Image 1 (spheres, helix red, strand yellow):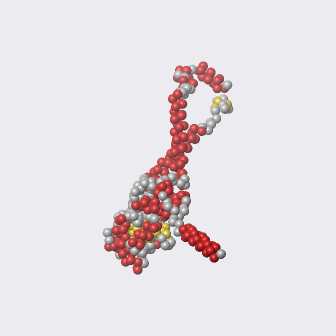
Image 2 (cartoon, each protein chain N blue to C red):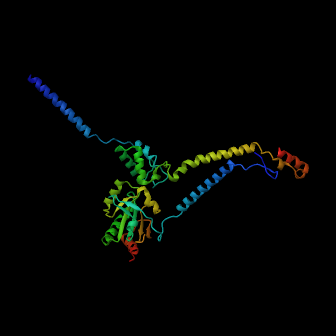
Image 3 (cartoon, one colour):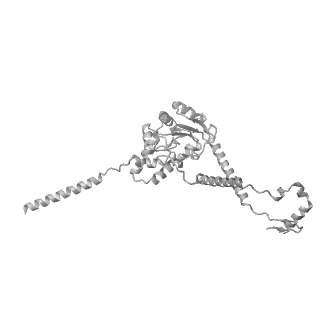
Length: 163
Length: 190
């Protein structure tokens, strides 16, 4: 009987220690590790104003390194890609985005290329058609000055018009 | 369809030509684009701001949350310094600006404002702590101030007189507090 009590106490103590250990482990969970690939996936869609033609993920300047660290911190805090982009736009302006938002005059960037392409294709089509089939000369142009002065022809023309 | 007129002449009514309208729209569109291009180039060719120009209004919300606008500061001399924590020349002039600020602060006629350009808050705070900067500083949200003043880099400092006119432009670090004081005194009319 005494042995059973001891065993029960030991079991309870072990279980208690396991539970306390699990709780402590949960509390001390380190922040999620954000890889460079995760950071660069977002950074590659941005440009910093300091080095305008270099994407943020490959820009070697200190300013860009700090921006990448900021992206890492925000990802670690659980921010989504869109939230991070919105923050950067609010903070540093829309020019940080590789793809400008279709607002204001920016929409011209999206509209002009297809319109220009279609207009070019139409003009090319018209040019090809005119090369292939020369326009027939009108009767009036085809007539010689002598013919157009002829009263007989003039009368025939008049009759044709009346019909 | 042909129509016979009273005088016996036969005329065809004028029909709307879709090709003509298409051409007109294309020319108007092209003219609009050229105008946009023209104004864009004109803006780009303006270059740096010059002394004597009216200083553009701005809105700066400091890291502490206080908002300053140039319009509100009318009647005071404004020293607007654009900097970044990663900029080494900015570090050179940071102590000079703080010294000058401490010299003018008791008189209340001059306001120093620091504008952190393309900087992260964390790095900005480290920079401000490092140089014990006490005058108001804030981030350049959307880089609007930088663009309004047509800045070309950092550090750049603009000194604006009490009437809102630009009286001094510095496109490099100050060489010492004396240079700042000379420019500010001129703006104060001393």
